[in-house]
Amino acid sequence: MNDVLEVMDSAVNVEFKEFTYFKEEDVELATFKIIEPSAEDWNKRARKQNIKMYIEINKRIPKDYQEVLTWIYSSEKEENHLAGNEMALFNL
Image 1: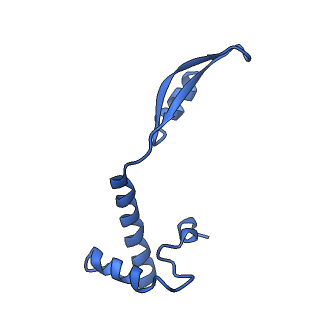
Image 2 (image 1 turned 120 degrees about the horizontal axis):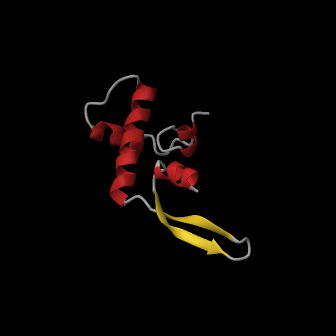
């Protein structure tokens, strides 16, 4: 049981809740709570990913984040543009 707790301790967005007894299986299992990232967290991740994609595509560091946003929004109508394309995150 401690092995599971050790593995889950290093997991992100997961918090140990309690041990729960399951009568049907006659076993006690650790239960966990999934912690949703805040909107601020998601925004930080998006900003980091946007900058990363900008550098990868344009081969240079942007002057500021506004330059990255301008690049994203100016390319918004291009169907397969990598900025904002979910598949770009998977490094296919």
